[in-house]
Amino acid sequence: MTARDLVGELTRGTVAPVYLVVGDDEAGKDEVVARLIALVDEDLRAFNVERFTAGDTHPDDVVFTARTRPMLGERRVIVYAHIERLFKGRQKAIEVEDESGPDDPPADPGGLERYLASPEPSTVLVLVASDINRATRLGKQLDKLSRSVECDGFVQDGFNGAAAAVREAMQFASDRLEAAGKRADAAALTALVERAGPDIVRLRKDIDTLVLFVGDAPAVSAQDVRLVVGAAQQFDDWAVTNAIAAGDAATALRHVQLMIENGASPFQMLGQIGWWVRSRMVQSAPQRVAASIRALYRADGASKLGRNPQVVLERLVVELCGPARRAA
Image 1 (spheres, rainbow, N blue to C red):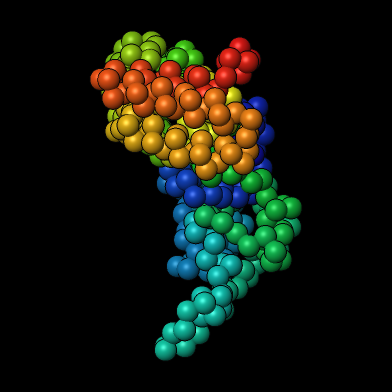
Image 2 (tube, rainbow, N blue to C red):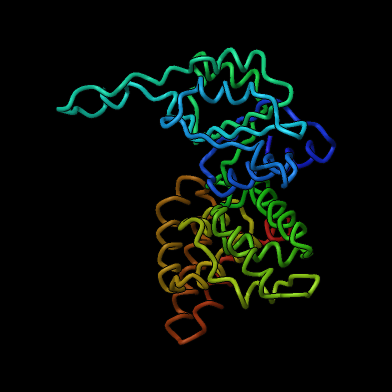
């Protein structure tokens, strides 16, 4: 499940005895851990919240603490970080020869496997990892017996036009703004996501900056985004040609604007499109090549006459997408 799903479960009062918080979004994992720690009253956290790190603390010591009854309150939260270290063994020694000898074998999971099978009802054990080896016995047990919260950011390839990936990022931004007491319309969310791309760290930072910028205002606008947030990220050098190939003029024009905002030269982009028509369109859509070459010739002539290069480029993109596709 996602962090958003976890919030929903906790709001409904559903609390699992063991959570696996896994992924490479470190800030996202920290926020999930903080939400789980908040299950313990703030006044009692000094007694009933403990943190351990794999490699520094043996799993048996963590299990012993997890089996200890909470003091004064009804629940303890135990955080065991970097448990990916429990899965690391001799692989590094195989990949890289080390004169000092082979690496140590994987850490003994000790009583952790038994604890997963029979957790303490009054304890929430939070296991945090960048990744786990799901082929091992411990990995299989975690898959089966823990509630997994995935913190992996956004799919990189999704920002070449895949609607699902963009919607996920927009929902993330909307939820985070709402949590800060702000609302944003579709235009503002689109501008935010277009600038951050699949970089969830940047998106989180941009949202926090916007919240500070608007102050007491209840909403964030697209103009606020343009004023505060940096230049748009160039998601893919071939995003424009990919959109042309799909006949999607709107997406192609949006990526033209983003790439120019990010410092790309319209003349360079014209050259790139010309290369793509001659080298790639010949293979994928040969029936469109002749008309596309004529459009390129007209665009080249217009740019040499001193016409606005961005306007020339945008007109070329629309023409290459074709009237039928534009209507679609």
